[in-house]
Image (cartoon, helix red, strand yellow):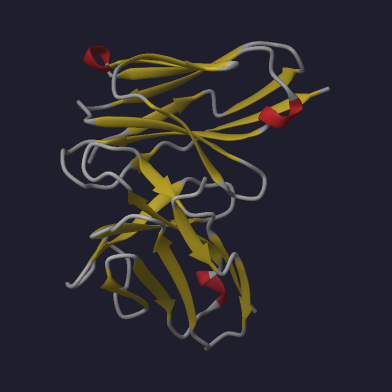
Length: 116
Length: 110
């Protein structure tokens, strides 16, 4: 069964609003979670690494003020897309390892964001 | 950073046919995973295979780490096998992210 739960699965919002996406680890603690973004017919690109109790690490070209990441507990990381614009429309997927370093990375089911 | 190349980019198969998907990577890796992304976007873990050979039903995978490639074999393909297959690698040890290839888009037709 799924070890990483992501919510919501789909969201449509108006330009200028903010959207929060939740990623939960089920039955395990995740000090680190990874957020990816996937545009249509493209591959998954790492956006940021979410670290429990400390600031997230963002990949080059990803605006940290636009994509706010909060990893306030060992089982929950949130990604907030602030002041969303149509170009932020994408598929966002989180991931975590249930057994720490050296084990497979498990992915949530993703969130399809459409900004109108 | 590490480069991950997958081939072919697109593949069309008749139902029942076999296929081999390839993943080349530019540096040594600690971890390699194969995924199937279904039409709804879900990423399904197929194999965690940093080296060696594994089989799961009609699917099998082989990674030759010293030569920096991995192969995914699909036998007796079914229409439900359609989707995108991704290879992803982890270069460093520790709890570090995966780097994805661009995928192979597979269409199995009846």
